[in-house]
Length: 212
Image: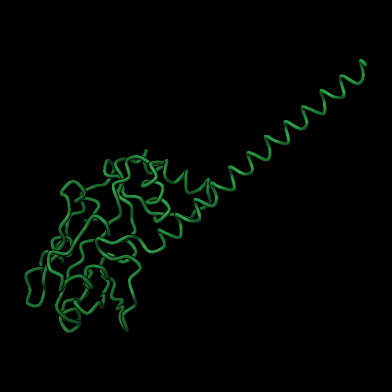
């Protein structure tokens, strides 16, 4: 995603709206960790205007060997309705609310945000999560997660590589690498042009010597 953002900022790619981390902000700062955990790797998902834009961005990444990224094309995203179980427990004691409802963002990207958050509910603590777990994804204010199938994820916190409203981790490094690739490409083109000129000059000299 960092490479895509760098290309957007240089004007190479059009129709790149931004990453989920850039485009969303918690309504309450107390929910920041829980919401960042809920989104997870989706923080770096890139919201784009259309699937055509996504295809062009993927082609750029592939041609420059700059890795992969997840794209959320607004013209193809479908409304992700809350499951019956999620709706049923959303008003239970200890449930703060649906993660996507605890974020501020432009309504135009609502389908992309809903996709990234997968109907996750934010709850106050692991006790509430254990009581309500099963059939719905829950994340606690402390950063623990319970998945619909019963898996539980938790432990010590790790530093997030992307935070709400911030630049993607590694963006500056990618910018430097892309600049270096461009510089080397220009050098290669210059050397090739010089070699062709020398070759043409030699051929001309050879032709003149034959007719002398």
